[in-house]
Length: 99
Ligand SMILES: [Zn+2]
Ligand SMILES: [Zn+2]
Picture 1 (cartoon, rainbow, N blue to C red):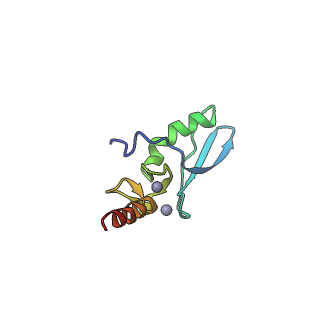
Picture 2: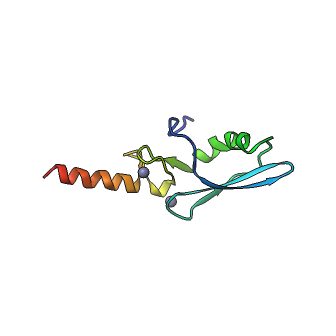
Picture 3: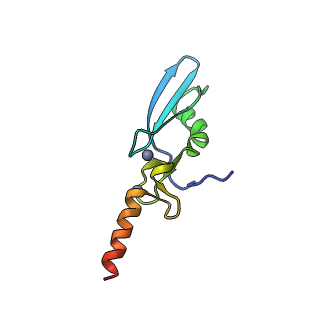
């Protein structure tokens, strides 16, 4: 499967748990309480673990092409490829310029 937004740096809000045998990320939507917790990832560093889990987490999160925030599917406008807030702003600008 192709990645949805390969050109946006994968940088959602997250918390990280670390134990001897690996890491576990919980990623959060920028706008709501939605979170996604990964399985335990065996890696030597947090950076490596993040790279390993990125593909999995990208299925649950979308990067806004406008503001770069990472949001859940509910806060993502698939057509505009933006978060709902940026899509709303676009809409308002269209209204102003149209008059
Ligand atoms: Zn959300
Ligand atoms: Zn946005």
